[in-house]
Length: 112
Image (cartoon, rainbow, N blue to C red; front, side):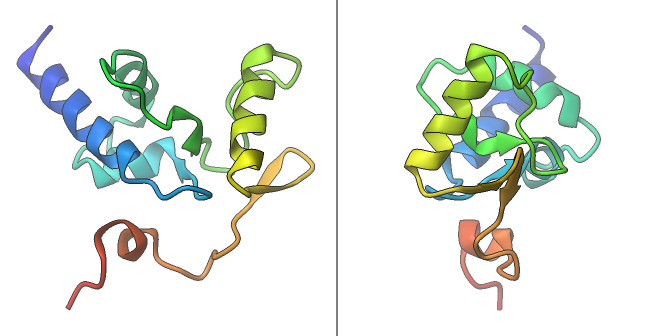
C-alpha cells in the first residue's frame, strides 16, 4: 500500500472515530476534516480497510441519505444502527438534530 494511502486511511479513521454518537458526517466532510478535501470517494475504501471497528455507519452521503441501495441488508443495518443512536429520519433522509451546531466544534471543541 502506498504511503499516501496509509496516511489518508489513518486520518480518515481518526475523524470517523471522533464522530459523536447520534451524529453523521458526509463522505466529503470526512475527507475535508482528514485534510484531503478532494478525496471523498476514497473514504469508503479507507473504512473498509480499518483494522479496528469504527462507527462506519455514521458516514453518509452529502444529501444526508444512506449510500447503500434501499432494499439491501447493508442499508437496513446502517439505518438500524443510526436509529439505535437516536438519529431521526424523514423518509430516507437523515434529520440532523443540531443542524445549527458546527460539526467541527462538536468534534474538536471551541476554536478561539
